[in-house]
Structures are given as C-alpha cells and as structure tokens.
Amino acid sequence: MRAHLGDQLVIESPKSWARRDGEIVGLHHEDGTPPYDVRWSDTDEVTLVFPGPDAHIRHVEHGQPETGHRVPQPDATAAETVSAAVAPTGQHNPGDIGRRVAAERHKQRLSLGETARRARMSPHYLQYLEEQPADPSVATLIRLADALGTTATALRGAGIDLPPGQGQALLHPRLRDLGPEDCRHLLSTHGVGRVAVSTPGGPAVVPVNYEIVDGAIAFRTAPDSIPARTVGSEVAFEVDHVDEALSQGWSVLVVGPARVVTEAGAVRQLVDRAHTTPWAGGEREMWVSIEPMRLTGRRITSDDK
Image 1 (tube, rainbow, N blue to C red):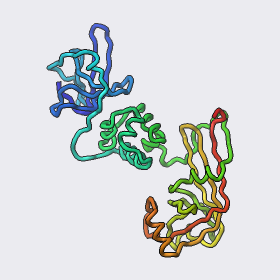
Image 2 (tube, rainbow, N blue to C red):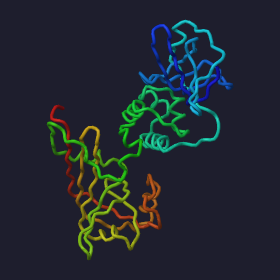
Image 3 (cartoon, one colour):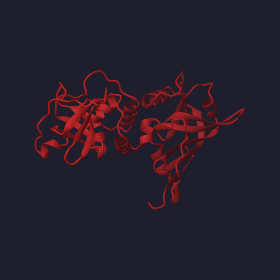
Image 4 (spheres, rainbow, N blue to C red):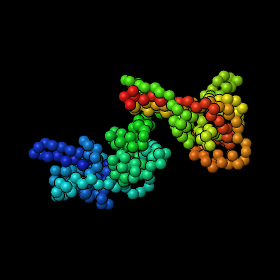
C-alpha cells in the first residue's frame, strides 16, 4: 500500500457495512507506505493510522482504489494515537487560503505552534496549509478563524467586494458608549481609518493607513492628495470594525486639528515607528498629525452579555 498527500483512505467492513474515510495529510515514510496521518471526514480529527485489511487507498489523480499488499492491523491504541501531520518537502507554493492564514497569524503575532494549539490541529499540518495550495474542510477553517479572531469567510476571501454589515442583526442588540480609555485601546497602534475632508467639490471621506504616536494620529500622504487638505483645519477621523459572524462591532470617532509634521526629528521618529507603508503606494512622504480633542466611540453587543 502506497499513498500520496491528499489521497483518501477508505475503511469498509464487509460484515457490518460500516464505512469511514479521511484525507491523508501526513506521511511518515518517503515511499508512501503506512502509517499515515489521516484527517477523518466525520470528525475532522487527525489521527495516526496503521491501515488494516479492510482499508484501501483512493488516489486523488484517478479516484481508483489501490489493490495489493495490506498491512496487518495493530492494537486500537496504536491505530488511534493522535499524531502530527508531516508537511511535504519542496518548494513553497501557498494557495490563497494559506496566504491569508499566514498573514493573519503574523498580524496577531502568533507563533505557528500557538495558532495550531488554539485551532486544535497539528503544527505540521498548519505549516502545510500555509505553504501549499490546500483546500481545508469547513470545520478546519472555522477552528482556524476562531483561533485567529477572524471568520472562515474572510480566510476564504469571499465577500471581498461587499461592504461589511450585511449579516443579520442581533435579536437583542445593545448599543453602548465607550469611554476615552476604551477608545484609545481600540485605536491601538496602527491600522486603516477614514479621514473626513472638506474639498472644493464638497466633503470627502478617504481611507488612510495610520499610526498612533504619543497619543496623536499620524498618516502619510502626498502634498497634492485629498488627505493633505486636512492640514490647518479641524477634522474628523474614524475607525471601526464589524464582526459579521457575531453581528457585533464598534466605532471610534476622533475630532481635532490636523497639522503637517515638518521637524526632521519628529519625521524620523514617525518613519522608524511606522508598521506599514501606505497601501496606495507611490510617493507619500508628507506626514499629517491629528491631535485628538474629542474622543468618542460606540459598541454593539448582545444584550445577553
């Protein structure tokens, strides 16, 4: 019996008509011989399996069972020992899901081992997902999303062109005001916010990458851009987050004067502390700082909490 990663292990009992199958996600021998790490389709658990006489391999390429040598079945304890899935060696070729998982993990500053522990899966299998064009099950995606504080939909990339907030409202929602400390915490150290600007053509709201430095909001832009028009006036800056799965969310609104940062030392400090470059790209070397004079926020949660 020989298998490749992604093949299906099928166990059928001719006496009881019982059937169980799972995806082979780990090999322990280079020649593809048993034992295998199998992710069972009925439980989504990964276990170490020594196939018995009732087992056969269904290859992904042609979907036909392999016939031939059968491996004697050891005791049940050895057959059901949870084991780490072994990722294949070779060049990395991550799929879209793997890239999103890896990006979210790095964003949360979680190690591969800690993420795997939270998602109740093998670190080696998580590494395989991040490095290969895999198609994990819905249950696996849900556990990963929960471990990373996001949604399975987000990891799949679905709904990227849809505005947030299309989920169902809570049965008993609770809208509450947030205090200044909660607002500062939610603003965190960096992210994407929206700045409201008055232009000759009317008001505009523009998303910008921002940093929090010494309590002030700072973002980079180009001198001839719309966000640059905030300089010298009082502006509004807003950050929010919507959790589609739980129908919850929050928003923080900052109001204060905007100024351009010209001091060489202050600019150097902003550049050194910047977490990301502007997503819009291009030459954006002008730093604008907004000093919060008013800080308000609101959060929607379930009234049961």
